[in-house]
Length: 495
Image (cartoon, rainbow, N blue to C red; front, side, top):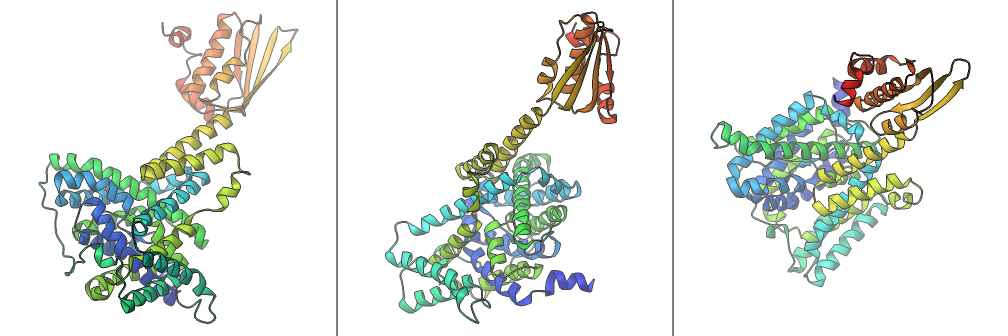
């Protein structure tokens, strides 16, 4: 118990506290912006970010990962808020949490093993592009001061770590925010600040139950949105966990993370917040700023609320240029630059999956669509590749006018046609032996192909013997095959 407590909370106190402060500063404009996207008051996003970060620090399955209100989730809420209002959004948030908890108990987090490395790379690159694109409105139609401040911020972020003694002690993004805020206030620069993003809340969040009718009609309204929110939230959280695992050389409990996200969203809905999920950008800020344990996530949530409630007069003075510099650093650090070099070295199918994932995510601004497209494409390429690894050879026994066909490889929907075409049904034979000792049958398409081959040979007057089926293949053939059952030809031909 003490060992676990130390590992999860007390093994990196200074780094976690400083990283949490940096993340909290970066969360504020994001939460406000995402609230505006969803069409709700800024405090809805801020309350959500505070609640989700604090709750997930205790119940999440990935220490050091940051969860809060996100743009991917906000985009799915727009229509619901516009047509039914905030109360239905809060109800949908509660249902989203319930669905995610159910997903955790069903161990759906394990489905991440079906996401290939090329899809993860495409997802990461697309997110880096989206993070950068999200900063462009802050860099268009502005004065030269903004460009100078942003450039100075990037200079501080990348050069400060090289300073002796202090360079490694204080996170450079935090130094960037503090220095640029001081400069903007000292010179009285007329540039956009956090205060221009929206009004900050002046009261603590309070417990409330959504004011909606508890009936089937309400469920039918919020269910489609809740399902979408739950899927996107878990998908983005699982992808983020994978990336943080790689950055820290540690492992995470994905099913616990599913449950944790659900509990956090229920808490958010009961405190007047919107649904959220893990944030790749803020998680990378946390890791690169030295955060490693649950303490960094808790610090981010608690300090966010403290800043909003107590330090609001200073907070509103932070220039957006400072936060833009931090987010540009995140986008540069997030992008997998090695993937460009690997385009020449990796197989064409791998490159296509990666590029399609990037294009779909950037085009739709929906991470789920991109990952789904990538996974489907990867599955098709895999099925096509495995289908080519099936071969059929044969040898003829002149004495018995018999031919033995030996099948090697995987027989399933992709290779079933090749399997059938490998037999010569017009050859005059007394007996045909189909040796499947080195083959495996995976689905009913493969079983149907075997039925077709056996019955065609029998129709030509040959005796057919199927040998060598392994236990798994024999089970599916016995269950779905018809070639050894009465009226097999009629069943197969549909007569």
